[in-house]
Image 1 (cartoon, helix red, strand yellow):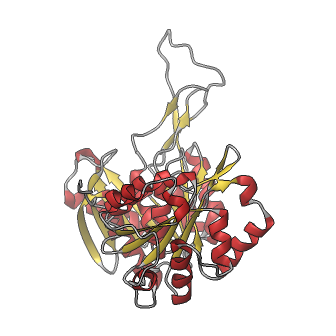
Image 2: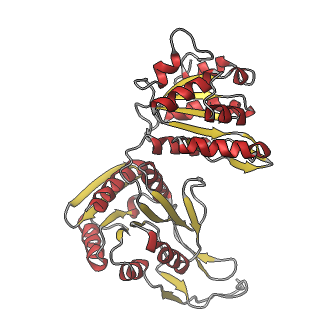
Image 3: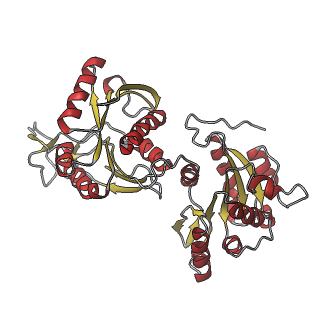
Length: 401
């Protein structure tokens, strides 16, 4: 059997997930779902209902996980071993979950291996996540709606389906894994509202041409994911759709002014602003209303925009703001000096500084310096998901002050 390699972003390291599969056609997705869980560091224990085995052969799940598939409860009391009060699993994931299975679990009926595992997990206080999959008409049945709400009141987490083509399709693997990471995370940011600006903005020259930057928005993405896993309620403001994840609300903007206006609108309900976007410093003085003729030379007049940090720190002085300072081809000492000046000018909680002239934009790795007034300077280098963890660690300290 081939070995599935754990990625650097091992957000489920040392966690054991019981993956319970029911009789939806979406069961065919479970081999890749199991692989995705393993890549994040999890051990996966497969459980299948009889109906699921008629869609996906148990051998496929055995191959995908490296563990024996549980299709019936035997004298080994598998449901208690894995999902009892002292069971060896960290979470029960039911994916896909049919209307039939959801309703049985809500009513305490356990006539399959999956429903017996669910009854045991809920009764033991073990975390349970459910990813529904069915036709939309079934999802909208009043009894199914009531049963979903009933399970939510019991503490069961539902990973929102994708509604299209008249179906409530199983959520994407990334959404499922993100929700599991949140359930099993530290909960250190529970109840906190975090707003992140991410990526570039663009300024119109004419209806076709723009001035923008090379910023990819990758850092903003990994910061949002890390904060969400720790329990924060997340909003991101981006130039174009980046995450595509149901759990993280995205506000799409174009220009520096639109991004600033969006931040000011959201800031009233925000605990922390992470200003990670590469916001345009200039805008076109008079953008053309029609496409500019390219047959001759043109002069474009730029005018400076009002700085987002200036406006938000003035209007919301109690807001914790994390600034970003990007420079090119300067010494580390000068980079840190400029970051200190930015922090002092706008009274920021911290500044993340990096020299993008030596890499970082559009790459998976970077080197940063995190500057805090009372905690000095932290230098971090590596993958951006590693850097995000360190930045969010700093934010945890900020909100505890």
